[in-house]
Amino acid sequence: MSETPDRLPTPCPSCSPTLETVHEVLTTGGGQYTVRCSECGHVQKITPEREREVTLDVVVSQGGDSFSANVTTPEDETLAVGDEFLLETDEVLATVRVTSLELSGDRRVDHAPATEVETVWTREVDNVGVNVTIHPNDTSRDQSRSTTIYVPGEYELEVGASETFGDDEFEIDAIVVRGDAEGYRRDRFEHEGDMVFAKDAKRVYAWDESSTAWSAW
Image: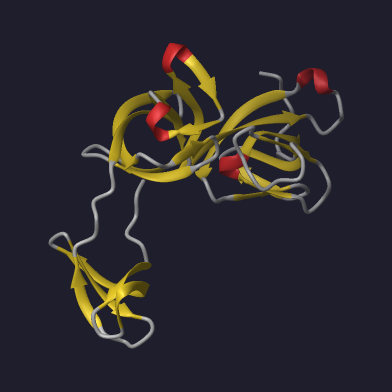
């Protein structure tokens, strides 16, 4: 989860040997940073202090399957439901979102210091399956049916928009947002033009637009 900073404070031997100034990180390698002083432009190599890290167990949900992995993060970091990070293992490279944090004693919380977390529960958000309930266009909802569409996580679902997936053609009527999604004013959108990213959609409700006759079977 940790990343190389763009800027960092360090003394400058040219203009500020005793006080730290802001330096721009130019390159990294061999455990050293090449940095440039923002005050005088002096370039130097420094060896940054190693952050104390913790290794966390991560469970990733991919569709109906799941697998376990490990990730390291600074021990002073706070984790929260809704956080997204790039998970890289020998088997997979994927962006995942935190859905739950498990502490000792099987306690589940929405946020916690990394040092207290035993398991990070996540789901992949690069490519997602979205459940869609399709109502027949004669408004008789007793024959509604469900399907699942598979799209990139950043795919835009818009109320009022028509979509075609295989033999399914439908117009989006409403979208329910997942509990781990952030940045939305409501948990349900049903006004024309409302948009939700697929990775944030818990369920879509739609009207059938298929050219074939409706059938419950």
